[in-house]
Image (tube, rainbow, N blue to C red):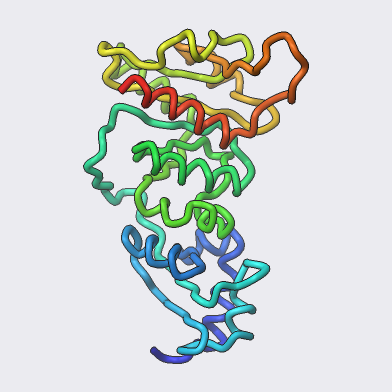
Length: 246
């Protein structure tokens, strides 16, 4: 492997910003395990390894981590028209409405991977899935979960027109108790679970399209608790409950 150049160091550092990731159609993954997992789903452009083609100082200059792990991979972002192949069931899609925190998004992608959810639909104001913090938090799951950015309310409306049996499940404070309201039935070939913004929940334009509003109850009931659950934790609970009926 040829030694990293100053221009490459500058390029990798620049990819910490979304505008540069979009302009170059590239993103970065760090750490041996994460890089190897991401390679399964994305085209590797550069690979830099401490002691082989980069010094510790150069790795530190390129890294977005407080403690660099010694391996940095630069990958090409997929074209939006590229097909996505998966042998997993397509009975369930997760949709995110304005999730802002990169750590939350990364954890949600990893959770989707665990529960066999291969499509993640995001509103355009959701965090960028190629943000370095998101990529690291996915621990390679990004190579197995297709992430798409859309006008969420318009996308849902179009899907409802095509599929009259579509179940759109949303977490709302005034929804039915999750554990008393089955999330799926034999008559619903496709369900979409929507999770909202960390502070504001699901937006009004999306909320009006929900067919099955549910809430995750706190315990014990009628006792003061935290105001809400972290969105990534709430997502894990929703997916686990959905899969319980499969």
